Length: 91
Length: 215
Image 1 (tube, each protein chain N blue to C red):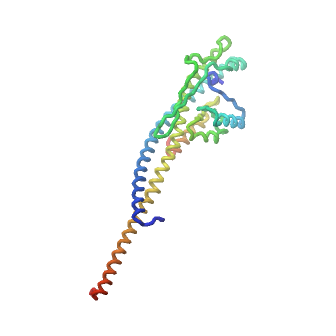
Image 2 (spheres, one colour; image 1 turned 180 degrees about the horizontal axis):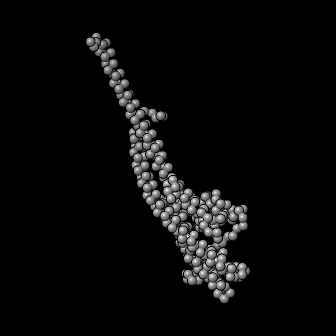
Image 3 (cartoon, one colour; image 1 turned 120 degrees about the vertical axis):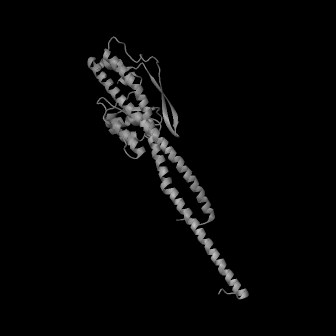
């Protein structure tokens, strides 16, 4: 909610289905969002959708911790990227 | 091996091998440099993420305190209409022929103290504090977005380059070398056969003309 005061656009979602459809709407070709911050507790639901945007320059989908604090999904994504590039997990 | 053992194919193969070797060397250099940059980005990413996670946790807990001190309606009303608006410009930077995004962040209001979209009369000081923390962490978040995207794009390109290097090193180049060897041996064999045939014919001609025989 606080992000709204900073001038960001906020899209609250209720449940998995809502999250998916909102995410799809935001990433549709006509939209011009360059960065989408997704709370980590939605990472599981949106996993495959987020993966689609790993290889394209825009938009950037970034996981941020929600109210519960860091859940480790972002860390896992970092590990996956390293593993992909290096061939093994060196962290 | 489906190559025709002719001189033309041999020359062509030799040229291809030269190109492949040079390409292999170049791609290997590219891979190494990409890897160096990637590891740098990863280190920075880890650092930034830790900072963002810490900052957001702080900001959220401050927000929780603020919402405990104010009624829900008041809080929502205070934050309902943002005064600040953010515009994000995006450019691209070229890192070893990988296009990575560079974000440029513009706020409509340049005064950083001017993020509070409400009057101070009916809100608690904790809310100001929470918003201030959020504004601070947002700058890191923006940088994190850029770094993380760069990391993903680099990872993808490293994977691609690595595959290419390996394909050249372990498949294409050995295959071409084997083919070249095969053709040159075949040609040598042909040469030998021709020579032997000529000698034989010479003997036959000599025998017919002068009745000459080797002892």
